[in-house]
Image 1 (cartoon, rainbow, N blue to C red):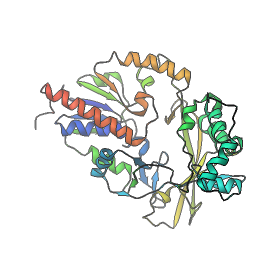
Image 2 (image 1 turned 135 degrees about the vertical axis):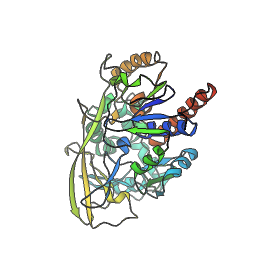
Image 3 (image 1 turned 45 degrees about the vertical axis):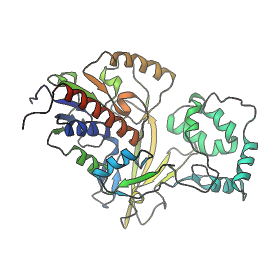
Image 4 (image 1 turned 30 degrees about the vertical axis):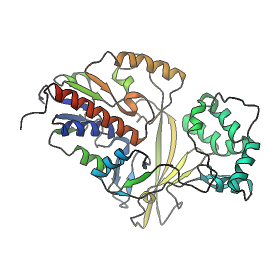
Length: 382
C-alpha cells in the first residue's frame, strides 16, 4: 500500500488510537489505523452474542464514568448512553455484601445499626494503632480497616488479582479504594456514568468513520510499516516495540469460562469472590449492563486472573519496583524517537480509566494537528 508522506500511522484501534485519528482528521490530516485483532475497540470491544442476543463485554466489563465534562460531551457525540450504576456485590463465607465498603456493609458485617458518625468511630477502634505510616497495601488496610475487614474483602482478592502478596503492593493502591460512611453503594463516585446503548465497538466505529481515516485489521505492527509516514502514534506495549531489549514489563491478564442459563443467574452485573479458597475473582452477568433490554436467557463469565505469558492479552500493568526500573530505561529510548509518540495504557505502562485515556488522546491529537497545521501539512488532496 502507498501513502503520502503527510499521513500518520496509528497503531491500535482502541480509544487512544481512534480519538487521535479523529482529531487529526478533523484538522484535515489523514491517518491509517492498524490493529492486530480482527475488530476495533481494543479491550472495550462489545459484540452481540449470536445465541442469546445479549451485548457482551468481550474483554471484561467497562462502565464509563467521569467527572470530565468535555470528555462526556465528546463520547456523547458518537453514542447514546444508557444509564447504568455499577452496584458490585461480594460473596463470602459470612454472606453477600455491598462493595465498596459502605455503611450498609459495616452494619451488616458487624451486626450493628450504626449511624455514619458511630460507624466512623467504631472503625477507628478496629484499625491497627501500631502502624504509623503504612508502607504497603496490607499495612494501609490494617491501619484503616482492621484485620477482619481486610481479610474478608481484600487480602484474598488482591492475591488472586495481582498474583502477589499485598505487602508487595504500594499503599497507594489501597488508597484508591473508597470507604464510605453512608449507604451509597454506587461503585463509582463520578458525575457522569453510563454505557453506550449500542456498545463500545459501535461508538469507536463512529469515531473512526471519517474519509481521512483508513483502518486495517489483522495487521501486526513492525517498524518497517512506519516508513513513508511522517509520524507514528503507538498505543501497543512499549516493551514489545523495543523487542524487550530491557526485559518484559509485568502484566496480569484475565480469562473467562462462559455459561449460559435461563432467567437471572445472580441478580447483579458483577459479583466478586474475595476469598482465596475460590479460584476465580468474580462472575460477570452481561445482560445487567443493559437494563433497558430484555432477554430470556443470560450469559455469565467466570473471571480468573493470571500472570501474562506469550500471546496473552495484556490487562493490568503490575508496576512493581523492577517494572518501574525497566520502564525508566524504555522511556529513555522513547525520548530518542522524534517520529514516534507512545500513548495509552500499554504505550505508557499505566493503568488508565477510559475517560483519562480519551482526555490524553484528545490533547495529543489537538497538539499534533496544530503543529502540523502550522507547518502547512494536511491530508491528501481530494
